[in-house]
Image (cartoon, rainbow, N blue to C red; front, side, top):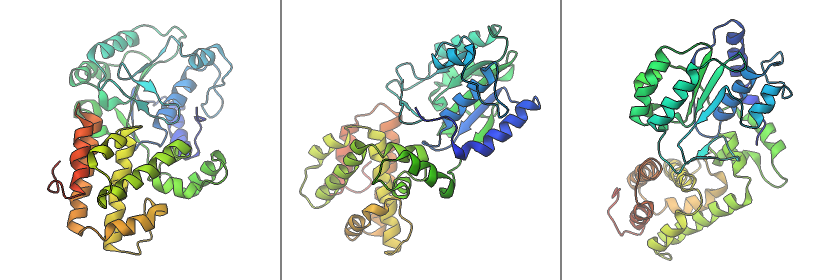
Length: 344
């Protein structure tokens, strides 16, 4: 598990602690920003500090008191984490892998009752919802009364990379804390200290779109190998050496959402190269030569259409119940001329 104290969180942490000391901590915080910035880690760090019996001068938990030991064991009586029922924690990142699609109304009702009880340790009662955008519409409606009339010293922490998917009625009742991409001069030294020798932190950060924790997951040699296999697969599809149906079977293996994010990133870079063959800014700079070969095969209009289709493919495969392999077959067939562009 990553250390919760991440250097690019420092300023937001200080501001929040100043509000806490002044008695101005909100009853509901909506933590937003793209995947890989540590929003979930920040939320848990805050919860630990608020529940700790002896936090330090910066508001961090001591790690030694009974409350800290209970939190570490996942059994603190005044803290709950809510996620889709079949979700499990991805310990390599600050995200949740999800089998179930939604947070259900019964889960919300249960923690609303939990918040109404007196805190057993005499302090805060805290609930963390992650990813909050998975709230079912009925569950979100059930949450509104608690957001409007929060009981006692309660705190709701809603974590999401897609706040627009939350109902406006929920968003308007929370104070939003936005996590932006941190400066490279802050991230590179931190990332370099986490990586094994031979891996470039700047390349990994580029491929991760500037998200440090996502970049760190790419240090996993299996993930990096899978990315290269997908690059080779896409090359063979475009040259007619690989059947799209066979290729789709490979694309759905592993982390499908991550595979499709890579696909989107490649098409974004193809557009950049089509508009400027010497573009200094690529999200996949290590693939420049490969991408230059691909870009010669497509018109600019087609590249924009393919980017739109890749984005739509990602949205369909990650947020709805669909036949992902069939959609991938359609998308990949388009690169061989098997279907009209924009078939998705």
